[in-house]
Every structure is written in structure tokens, then in C-alpha cells.
Length: 208
Image: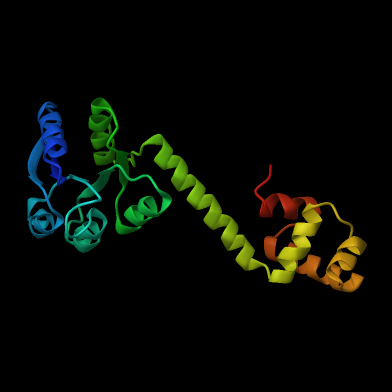
């Protein structure tokens, strides 16, 4: 059974090009295409597409908002963003809305076809630089979460530990008692589930 695809794209030349590309592959079947999100949001829940190729910058409702509106009404549908946008904010918003694929419009036609098939099989196809951006977002969020685990003072102490300072030097730098430094470090080790300075620094700063 062919993969059922719908397109939501306001630019006629892009929409027609995608439609022609999909029709050229016997494993795919084009259900319908739309030039605005409002029409797509109304009809997609009834079309039961396997894949929806969705632009972001649409007149009126954006592609991201369209996914938010209809995602629960289309439980069997996978959404793939197809856009010129590659900034972190748009990528993250699209993924949070429910998109499971993200391709840039400069993607080669053959790669678009392969990505549609990959998405239908449970994959999450993305342009390589988009995948890197998502990884960076994940790593930054991971570091932020770790920082929230520690108090501001514990963060200060751990940073100075990472800089190689001794307990006495940390006490002098922060103008606190030597025993207070030991107290903070004990709590740092407990919160990060480590046994020593090296493990604490490596785990916190994601060092090997």
C-alpha cells in the first residue's frame, strides 16, 4: 500500500514541484495539497494522511500552529517541516508542536523522497545541520538542568574546582571558611552522585 502524502505550502512553484516529485514515486500517493494552514486544519483530520509535508511560513496560521491544532485529531499522521528556517527557535517550536521530521527546502529531491519513506517507517529524518542544532539544544538544556541542581554558591565552588584551585584557595577567593568549602563540596558530590573532584568536574561539564 502506498504512503499517503499531503502538502501544505503557499508557494505554488514549491507546492507543484513537491506534488510532481511525489507522483513520480510509485511507493507514494498524493492525497491533496493546500496553500494555507486554515484549509489544511479543516480537511487533514478527514484525509488520514500518513505524512504531511508542512511549510512554516504560511499566510495566516503558521505551519507550526497548524500542527498544534490538528495533531491530536490526526493520531496516525507524521508531520515533516519543509522550510527555509533553520534557527534554533523555529526548530524547537516545530518539534514541540509534534513534527517528527525537519527538512530544508534546499534538500535534494531524492533525499526528500527517502526522508518521506524513512518518516513513514518510524524514523525522524532531518537535514544534517538541523540535527546538529537539536543536539546543541539538548546539550545546553542538559547543562542548564545540572546547574539548577546546584545552588549558586555550589556552582561557584565547582567552577573554581574545575579551574584547579585548592580548598584553601577557594575559601580565600570566595571569602568563606575552609570548613564551608568542604561542606559545599560534600553536597556537590552528593547531588551529582560522584566520589571526587575529577568525577564531579567531568560529569558537570560533560568532559571525557
